[in-house]
Image 1 (cartoon, helix red, strand yellow):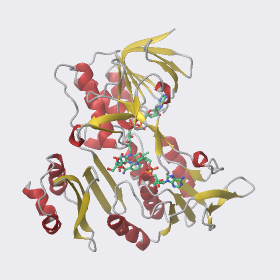
Image 2: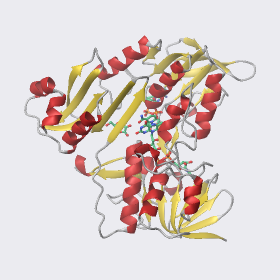
Image 3: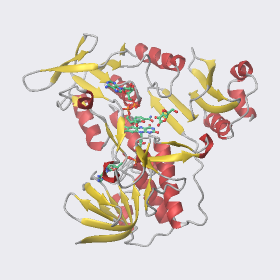
Image 4: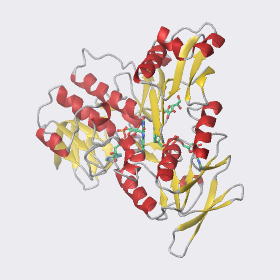
Length: 427
Ligand code: FAD
Ligand code: NAD
Ligand code: ISD
C-alpha cells in the first residue's frame, strides 16, 4: 500500500523548488503535489555550496538560500510547502520506478503513485575510482554535490588552516573550490589534465587571464596530468597525492571535481535517452507522455541552436526547464516549446563572468585583459553564436545576451574586435 498524488516531483534540488513555486502560482490545490528527495532539507540554491557556504567569515547557511532566492523570488522554507499543501517526502531515496504502472518504490518500501511525474534527479559527482584511482573515500578527500558534502568540506578545511590542499579537476568545482580554499588560508596546488582550466567554456586566452590571477593569489598549477594514487597515514588519511607524471604532492586535504553523471538510472530501458540524459521535447515531456524531465537530467532541444538536443548542467536551465514543464502540464493549450538561451556564470575572488549561447565558431576577444575588463564573441556563418564577459554591468550582460539571442549579424571580424561591447549595444 502507499500514497497516490496527481503530481510527483522526483528529486528535491533546484529544479524541484522552482517547479513547486510554479505549481503554486498556477493555483494547484492542496494534497495534489508530492516531492520526494534523498536530501533531508527543502530545495536550496545549489550554487551557494561552492561560494557563500565556503566563506571563512559570515558563511551562507540554510534557511537563507532555499529556492527561489537565486532569482529574488520567495524563499520556500519547509513551512511554505506545508502552507501550500505540498507533501514532502525527504531523506528518502527512490529505488525503482515503473512508468507503465506510474509508480515509484522508495527505499523505505513505500509505493508512491502519480498521474504526472516530473523527474528532477539532477546528477552525481564522478568518483576517482571510476578512473581506476583507489582511496578517494578517505576522510580528508572531498567531493562537492550536496549540502552534506559541503558541510564536510567546511569541517575538513577548518582542520587544515595554514596547510596544503590538492584540487583535482580543472572545471567549475576546481575553479570555485580553489578560490574558497585560498580564502580559508589553505595553500592550493591545482591539478588537471587539460592545457588550461575550464576547457568547456574558456579559450586559452581567457583561461590564461584567470590562471595568472590565481597564481597571483599563490595557487600552484600542474597541468596535463592526472592523479594515479594516494599515500595515507596509519589512520587512513591521505598525506600525499601521486601524479601520473611521477610527482608527489604532500597534502593535508584533497578536493575532487572531475565532472558529473546525470541520475538517469531509474529510467534506463523505460524512457528514451540522449546526451547522457533523459530525452525530452520542447515541453520537457519524455517519451512517456505522463513523465517530464527537467534540470541536469534532461536533454532538451534548443530552438536557438536549430533544435540541437543538449543536456545543460547549470542552474538557470534547471530553473527555466522546471517552470516550463509545470506550464506545459497545467496549461497545455497555451504553452509552446521552450525557447531557451543557454546561460552560464561563475564568481571567484573578486572576479565574475557570464556566458550566453554556444561557444562554437571563430572567436574574437575584446577589451583590456590587463585591467580585467574583457570579453569574447563566438561567430559562426556570419552570426553571433556566443558571448563571454568578465566584470560586466547589468546593462552590459543584458546587451550581450540580447545580441546572442538575436544571433546578430557579423560582417567584419576585425571591426567586431575593435567595437567590443559597443557591438552588442548597437544590436
Ligand atoms: P539537483 O539540484 O542536483 O537536485 C537533484 C535532486 O534529486 C537532489 O535533491 C537529489 O538528492 C535528488 N535525487 C536524485 N536521485 C534521487 C532518488 N533516486 N531518490 C530521491 N531523490 C533523488 N550552476 C550555475 O549555473 N552556476 C553556478 O554557480 C553553479 N554552482 C554550482 C555549485 C555546486 C557546488 C554544484 C554541485 C553545482 C553548481 N551549479 C551551478 C550547477 C547547478 O547547481 C545544477 O545545474 C542544478 O542544481 C541542477 O538542478 P537539478 O534540480 O536538476 O538537480
Ligand atoms: P566539469 O565538467 O566542469 O569539470 C571537470 C574537470 O575534471 C575537467 O577539467 C576535466 O578535464 C577534469 N577531469 C575529467 N576526468 C578527470 C580525471 N580522471 N582526473 C582528473 N581530472 C579529470 O565538472 P566539475 O567541475 O566537477 O563540476 C561538476 C558540476 O557542477 C558540473 O555540472 C558543473 O556545471 C557544476 N558546477 C557549475 C558551477 C557554475 O556553473 N558556476 C559551479 C560549480 C559546479
Ligand atoms: O553544460 C554546459 C557547460 O557546463 C558548459 O560550459 O554546456 C556548456 C558548454 O560546454 C559550453 O557551451
